[in-house]
Image (cartoon, rainbow, N blue to C red; front, side, top):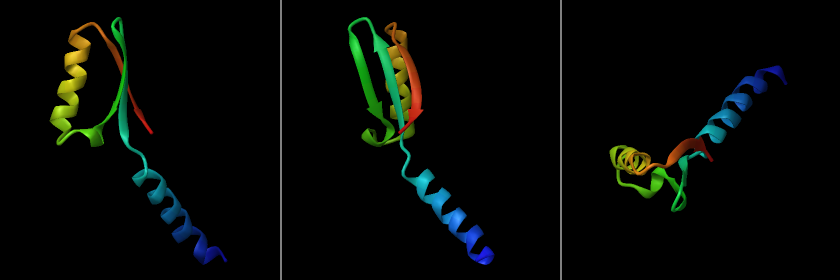
Length: 65
């Protein structure tokens, strides 16, 4: 039983991490915006979207969903 514990633990953790996606929640005076990295073609476009909202006066927080 003990020899199956570590592989099962690794499998469970890897499945948990692979199902998470990086998202941002931005609170703005003109409305709230929620978006995730998988909605963009690249990480640079995702970061640029967050930067544009923050320049406009929004407060953004990144979260894993």
